[in-house]
Structure formats: structure tokens, C-alpha cells
Image (cartoon, rainbow, N blue to C red; front, side, top):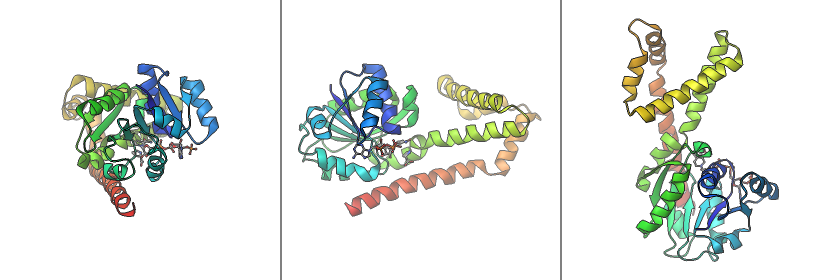
Length: 269
Ligand SMILES: NC(=O)C1=CN([C@@H]2O[C@H](COP(=O)(O)OP(=O)(O)OC[C@H]3O[C@@H](n4cnc5c(N)ncnc54)[C@H](OP(=O)(O)O)[C@@H]3O)[C@@H](O)[C@H]2O)C=CC1
Ligand SMILES: O=C(O)[C@@H]1CCC=N1
């Protein structure tokens, strides 16, 4: 199976890393606008740079990882080169399948995926939505591809804005928490290196425990919270500062932005 990745920036590279570590670089072509980026990826992953039309003509799957505003231009540019059975995958936030379909030949299979950057270390979370007429086999092709980057769920496209709020943008919330915890540790007198190590490993440990224990987060939180102890005081302050409500508002803003991007794409297109 020949895989073509178009626009290999931060998200594209994270997906590329997952694919290459699971399948090797031999069947992967990358398309970039800068030659230095091509060479960087060739050196780092052993993949082959190519021009868009040439790569599209040879593709079984094309993964578009350019910015949402650049997707339709890339679809127009590859439309004539694609084989009818090639599956076109977009990783773009707020970019509806309908817009993709408009810019491709009728019947070209299209799939929308919301991945996240932990794909770079094989710990990604991808949500996959199939366009009209995508066969079970074609959908499986995409889920098999994304599983090289971590976990995969299949969702209706109507859920992609919510997915973006939880897992697409989610790593950024946790990186911000990591920064905040390390900084607070420094304020409490720890050397920066120690504070950073403590914060990072705590987030990793809690994350692995959440996933591997299968225990509800409330129970895991209770297990840390001794009555009358230190954690209860810390959580009380988080409640007073409405951290839970802040997450809800932040994620609603993320969801609404994704939905507004999709509406604008549909209207302007
Ligand atoms: N970052 C994230 O956490 C996530 C991002 N996404 C989606 O992934 C997509 C990419 O985002 P991200 O990786 O953050 O952005 P980046 O800017 O890092 O990546 C975009 C890449 O596309 C390249 N590019 C732009 N125009 C062209 C072109 N005409 N031909 C070939 N390559 C081109 C850019 O090249 P150059 O370096 O020259 O500008 C860059 O390498 C977006 O659609 C975003 O919505 C989805 C989930 C999570
Ligand atoms: O911020 C963004 O728009 C992209 C989509 C999800 C994560 N990053």
C-alpha cells in the first residue's frame, strides 16, 4: 500500500512517525513546499519526497496535513491525478467531508480524521469519520493506518467538533498543566529541573494509570485524597477557582470554533 503525506508539519510528522515505525519508510512518499523540509524528513525517517501530482497518481491513500485553509487547493491540485480507488484522508480541523467531496471526482473515497500530536510517540488518539460511499475495506485501511499512531475510534462526522475539543486540542491543555505545575514547584523552592521532572512524570504516571487500570478517575482521585490531608486542601482551591467550569468553557470554545470553521468552509466554498 502506497501512502502519500501532504504538508508534513507538526501533525503530519507525528503521523509519519507512527506510520514509519510500524511499517517502515519504503511505501511512504512525502509532499512539501520546501525542499529543506523534504530533506529533513528523508534523513530522519528514510521516506521519499515527491511532487504532488506524481505522488497522487501512485497513491493508495493520501493524507492531507496542511492547514484547513489550504486543503481545498491541494484537493484541486491532485484531483486529476488520483486513481478512482485512492482514499483521500484529511486531518484538518473544521473541514467537512462535503467540502472535500466537492473538490474531488465523484465517488472518490474521502475520510476525515482528527488525530493528536502524541502520535509522534505512538500514543495518539484518532477519531475517524467516513464520507459517503466509503467501503468497509476502505475505512479499515484508514483505521489500520491510524492505529500505527495509537488508538482509533470511528465516530459520525457530527461528533468531530467535540472530538477536537477533547482529544485533538487536548494535549495542549495537559502541556499547559505541566507548565503550571512545574512553575508552581519552582515558586515553592524546587530547582527548575527537579520541578519539571516531577510534574512531567506525575502526568505520565497518572495518564498510564487512568488508561491501564480501567478505574474511574473519581476513584483514582479519591485514592490520593486522604481525609483532612494535603490533597483535599489543594482540590478545594481548584474547586474555588472553578477549574472544572474553566475546562467546560474552554472546551466549548474549542468545539464552537471548529463548528464555525466548518460553517465558513461550507459557505465560502
Ligand atoms: N497540531 C495539532 O495538534 C493538530 C493539527 N491538526 C490539523 O493538522 C493540520 C496541520 O496542522 P499543523 O501540523 O499544526 O500545522 P503546520 O503548519 O505545522 O503544518 C502544515 C504543513 O503544511 C505545509 N504546507 C503548506 N502549504 C503546502 C503546500 N502547498 N504543499 C505542501 N505542503 C504545504 C507547511 O509547510 P511550511 O513549513 O513550508 O509552512 C507545513 O509543513 C491542520 O489542518 C490542523 O487542523 C489536527 C489535529 C491536531
Ligand atoms: O489548534 C488547532 O486548530 C489544531 C486542531 C486541533 C489541534 N490543533
